[in-house]
Length: 394
Ligand code: 7TS
Image 1 (cartoon, rainbow, N blue to C red):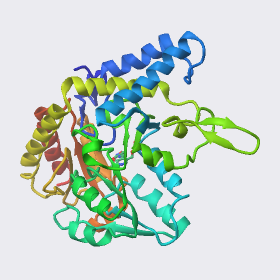
Image 2 (tube, rainbow, N blue to C red):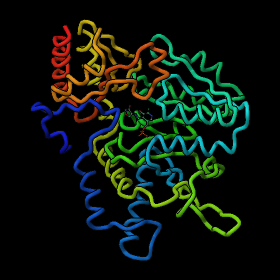
Image 3 (spheres, rainbow, N blue to C red):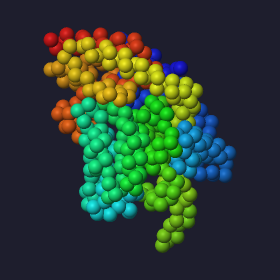
Image 4 (tube, helix red, strand yellow):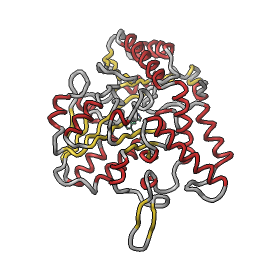
């Protein structure tokens, strides 16, 4: 396993990278694949009639196949976007043509702004009702209230699989079953779960699922929207241009087949190739092994963190590899800045979940999050550094 970026010192200390929920680092295989593409194969896709364009098109199409196999979808159900944010906005814009005033959308209180604001704004534009599943004291979703909120009026249920702020793993299968009983469509934000647990869209039976490549060892600027074929066929594209049309006349246009109908313009070809390599990297290690490793680190970290005096841990029962905490009388930004002096990368703030922070009545937290290259030693270094933070603010 070679992640070149990790072999450096920050402030003369070994870099300890604990900001994986924001983005993951890239293995050498991914970096080399992008370099090789630009050195050998770069050309636009859509099957130009020259060798380089053919090579580039084949690699771009194969990247769709790899993602499809990775999440057990069909090839034409995989749309490449720039990331989770674009995937969800694509859906919100496409549903604009289908939803009617007083239709209801259900989301949760723990959504990242990317799965909150597009629905909120759509609701405002179309006079829809936005209903929000609250959190219980134990930081899990209140499923009893969820059952009451999801009714025959609910058209869309959009929920995150793993909370990027608290690490809560939501019982998405249960929520999907309940939504389908009410004929509601389900959208899963898998931005945090995609690199941490096996996603099988057929088993989940979700209607749509979104994730970002950069959170699973691929470059930034490439992401995925999965949708069931029959639903994608019904949705109208909201982005128009080259590659997505079948025929254009002065009066009107018809759309290309899936998934190209939703991929207007020159796509992020090198990003897609990087994503394919990243998936190969994950498959070589085994997603189950990654999950086990990160779970062990999470347990270890919690067992150490909870002994720190003055710490508040925001840990739910069903916890993914993301841990939020605050230190008494020390602002999260100050904590993160001092940890940086020790070479440790962490996040501080509201993590793009302001409604959740309001619910918890806090401005923000410190957040650490793990990946396959993290070790127990990283956590030991963190714990020592937190002790130093507390010394500084004594
Ligand atoms: N949904 C969740 C659950 C996320 O964690 C993020 C990014 C997004 C959506 C948006 O992904 P993007 O790739 O389109 O930006 N989360 C974070 C984070 O927690 N810190 O930085 C980015």
